[in-house]
Length: 299
Image (cartoon, rainbow, N blue to C red; front, top):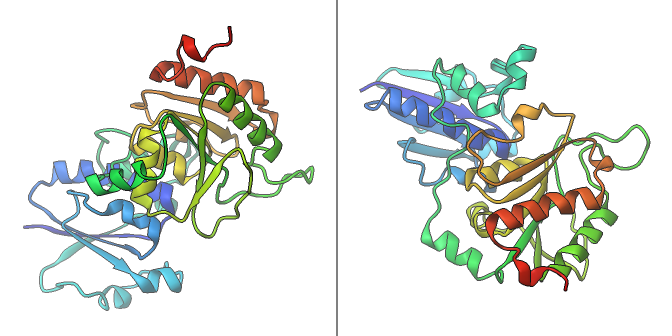
């Protein structure tokens, strides 16, 4: 049996996109034994239950020390069986994303091509349990909408008006008022326990939930409205109904896997997306899902 050691020190989005590479790899090497080592962070638990990983090891040192130099000496400190040879794959975008052409393709494709394979699909894999879905159901009343205000690697705007990937808070407030006018009264905002919260009577904050419970929330939402972020990739993993406010700082090919069934992407400078334009996209998603009907329309 061939043994393979995958090491990943990535944020949520890349961690999810790696699952597409793992699926293709396991199909190409069905008798292989795959060990996957990653940092012990709440969001890396999206890998729990993944059948393409035979041994999943969460490493605290990678989390607390920010370890990214995976030397041979460090690898041999891991609690693994090194009696048999293992092929090492360090899953880092910087190792393959070296040309403009590669940078433009979906991240899932890039990771899979890095292994010399073609992806089975671009949409990430996550394996939810009945307990994950039960927890999510206990927190909301259907139909509900999920908002995600936060994005990592978010530089300041040159005009001094906030950050480049953000959508102005007054626009979020107006969007929520319009959603309530359609009859959707449960609107929740999500994020990590470290993200800043905005308090408002028009939405509830559900920050710091287990990541797979968040995925289950996204899965059953009438619509998810998110910036370019790991939450967007998580929503794609469950094929959530979604509107993405996608900053043109990132390639458009990253925004939407080809298998997404109910996603609208607004691409450009988020500050130029009016509440009217975003609400129009949300309405399309809600209508496609059958959430908006004639009874929601004004007389």
